[in-house]
Length: 467
Ligand code: 4AD
Ligand code: MG
Image (cartoon, rainbow, N blue to C red):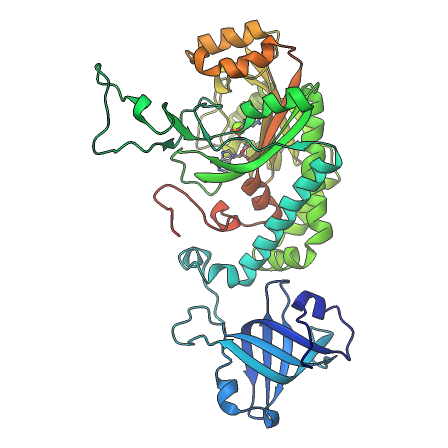
């Protein structure tokens, strides 16, 4: 027994009975009577526990008393067929070492359920729950699948900077990065802040998107993707917004808007299929506990073609709905940016399938989108999903130097700060497109969780940056 190697619970549950084994993990529950105890042990490798059977004849009562919910153990014993229901095998314990006791009075995670809001406040507890174990494993599986999808297609993973001077989306909701002493800010003669004294010698912020730098990569190596943290200081306290989230931004030379849409659809379907193929235990748990329609909803997006609709058509449908008595919280007419309630109406009530909305008014979209011939709309595309609304935003990019410069001027943006980007249109410009998938929006869809704070290990939202 001394040379036994630890096996993870996931592996043990798939091992045939008969072997001597060693398991390590945390106690989920202990039950039984004076003669025999049953311990449910979990090590995070799977949502399922391995049952450890303790025959009290062979164990010191003082030791077994220390085995309470949350305590950590090393168990050696024989893997035997389980007579109880729910598992094929269990461990007949021969030796138990308690690594760490867990005070049953102070440990807040007893059998009773604890709310998701409460769990967000207890850093050490949250990842130990079945729910967050499932979310963390699915999050990992999706990250892996994203890299696999692009790698298999020959895309290059490009790391774009987190500290930047460029406001790609032009929304202005950036977190400033500075080492200036805020109590004693250096000023220029006119009273403006003297950023030449700041760390980088200029005003810098955390990135809201890696796209602009991504375009430099795509117009060199052809097809790239980014996958990294993204920061937005928008004061949106909604179940779909984070101040720090992760975004995946593919950018492809020689793709037009149609190619862009096709890739976006293939991409999200691939990810959903990957989750169904690889995360079923966790999905079933989440389905049963939080969202009975989850697995069905995941399957439902795979079998359909997403519906492509122009923004203008979308607005007509929404206005028609209002005329027929449907009431939205926010007004809707041509020129407004759609709210999540409008997006969800199109997806869940009207079309009953994922929708790709295209050709938006130029005034509600970023400067880099390709202008249509009508001079009013741009070649953008948003992928809208059930329960979420917008999950992807993207576009064909303005490849014409002249039109791009005109748009930058119209928006009174600084051309000087963007020269490095505009150069791509000066030297061998090409049609190109890309999009951004919000990683946590994807996870909301795949896990069925209702609040975006519950699909990221350490959520950052207005007035909240715990741990
Ligand atoms: O639509 P957005 O703002 O597009 C861009 O940033 C482009 N540069 C993408 C591109 O074309 N390369 O953001 C893209 C996606 C949204 O569709 C949404 O899923 C997610 O990022 N997102 C957020 N997710 C969580 N919290 C927030 N505050 C988010 N803002 C955007
Ligand atoms: Mg968007």
